[in-house]
Length: 313
Image (cartoon, rainbow, N blue to C red; front, side, top):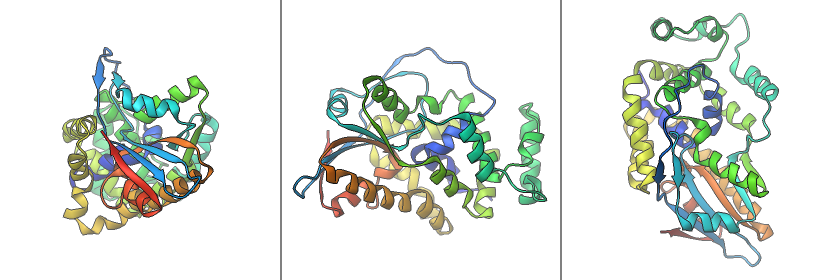
């Protein structure tokens, strides 16, 4: 049994920068391809507070991984970003040290003896893992003490790298670099601690499904990710919504997964953004595209919190 349509990887790529940050540590890394220019027209939302003195939010849904190409988003995005007082992202990883990452990985991703990865997964999943690592000439020992969710992330990172995708080239990263170069403040809506706690808090059954999924569906990964990134680049939110939420329609048992990874976080983000806007500042907000989609996405939630929300084209 696997999560339908590689659920966790589709959702993570649009909603979980922390997972993809960990994936950067995966041992495999594809050679950088020649940099060519890519023009994208993703959907941009503006949310203006209706209460006196409330600021405005310019909201861009992003993909947290890309191939090595120069990304052009056009003058409207540059204009809103340029005049914003702050950049807001899901997680500000700019000050993260290797020591802090190691501490958080130990806290959330390492299992305590006498448990081990082997004791937490089925014989079938274990057989798939050992075969995969042998085929990719990777040692088994470093994975023995890791939780299934973290092994899934690490192997997913290896697959992403082999396809030329790199979390370091994500859209959020691009704007963080722009902000840093101009002295624009960067604010995170969540912490890395928050996101790793979320992943480690998934049920053992879902964690094993994540791992099994990445092991048995690697051949489908290329088409899946390219479809997702292409839909984002063309501003095709209907297609993105289909890709991200199709599994929710097909498998009701995954309701809790979506609630934790997407919908609960949307509510917290909307509350935080509404509170931040009370100071009257103008902010440019970059979050994973999964968070701006549908009736439970940030644009709808901000409208319910007293903002006039418009789609900028």
